[in-house]
Length: 177
Image 1 (cartoon, rainbow, N blue to C red):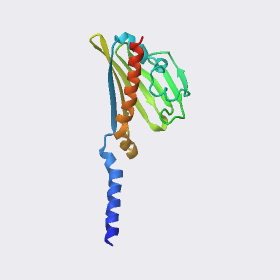
Image 2 (image 1 turned 180 degrees about the horizontal axis):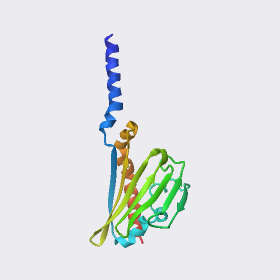
Image 3 (image 1 turned 135 degrees about the horizontal axis):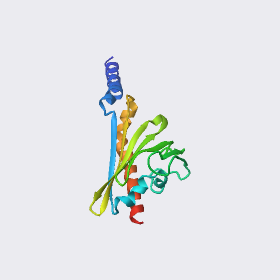
Image 4 (image 1 turned 45 degrees about the vertical axis):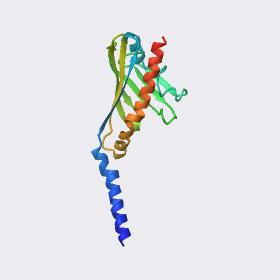
């Protein structure tokens, strides 16, 4: 009888942890990574203001060179849109559209991952002596989904690692000319 009581208490505690605790976790997750590139902003900006140019340094497209990419709108700036489809689990499918562009300073995009949710991303370029500090950021609202909130705890390491990889690829691309 004592065993059954302890088991019931253990199951109840587990339910509380799995269902109640996620609502105490942040609903919104922000990830940012920064790199200093030894080049002026005008040499970097074309690589972040064009979704086509992103192909050369994207941390995800290198995982699946066979991903299907469809571009719409202008080649760069506001309205430029990329739709991608991939069977690779770390690439997936979705859209990315540039929603704001301030030459040599900032680019903002809207991401839609279908059932996986939406997010906003941005690049900022700040002068740093003769170099430029480039920050790549991402914010998403996890809503009321408890599983998404648990996954939100891992978002910084998952997305952050990819952002670091992409920024280092961008740095190498720009600095090598």
